[in-house]
Length: 515
Image (cartoon, rainbow, N blue to C red):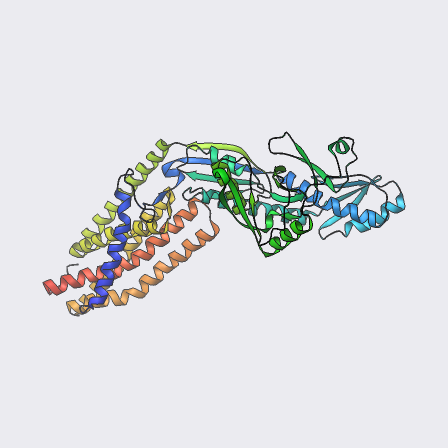
């Protein structure tokens, strides 16, 4: 114990100094500009205020789109088997097709049910209704919700919002908490766009007059420009869709005009190259959220999987479009159905209340440990301060968000640190009563109590990890802070306390332990 190597002492001191260094920003005024890697602990919505959005996922739109995807397949199957039909239409609750002939209807029932797994087909009078099974529908909705949450997270993270809380509420809603954001209008606009991009060939043989007379082929559709002035007749099926995109960014064309560059994966790049090679001289429309944003003429084959979207973009619009394309397409429309702003005043009250509670708890622990163990209690108090600073330093370094439950976890970890020292000091007392020397008793206190300290702390860490795994929001904040605090307390209560007591005993050479 008393022959600590110089290297070990330097490592302990270095860890303490690094932790204290990263804790410093938490005690500086907010007006001080600091580098991005040296920032204070991020405060949660309950401490610094911010915005809370409740988003509704348009599951009806998802189901209708799913049925529309089946519509082309159903039409093809019926034509292949020469079954006459009427009024083939997709609705959110199913795909409907009217077949007057009983025998043809019976045959069609079997063919349609085999389009893909998870479908049921039944007849209602002279109409066949094709629906998804309850299990398949629930799986689709769950997948859409999970995908929406992930894409919302990507978009908000790219905006630079610190530590947003994004989680599901029920089967079709998403809660988004944005600490420090008092005006979430930009976020709402960004989340309101689905950013579904696809490429379609423009059909010059059909006319808008044909579309108005209802004589448009089922393989074609009319899509307006973004400004709503012009309309284009496009192939219904996309030649390449946005799922093949791997990257998008802002570039500048002649005259310093903003544009959006994009890149396909290998499969998408190959398809894009084939389409542009086979259709030179034709128009290729770029469709975003059912609006044609550009319809350039293909001048030559575009290989390499790269392209550029030009239009009347401002720099901000081009950046937002690139961001949405990078993060992926939302599988469904999101609607803000509730919006609440937590004022900074409430956050200040929460911080004040949490600070007062922390100081009271900290002071009570210090009074107890000093009253119970005298000089060694003072040494323990020093390690508690080091523990507090190191915890803040680690939380600042890894970007953890501090919430009110997190403050509770911080206080609890301090109490756990004292518990470790109590075990050590009580073991010292027992060894001293057995007649062992001061040095041996102190050494035994640290070595013999170590196994018990590890057991008691690891069981708490396991419980905190379970809370983190199963919990959400504030529960996770509590678990993270508690885990960090406990791990650091094992370092300060044993290693740092041991160094302080060893230095004191080497210097003062006591004949009796002051506990």
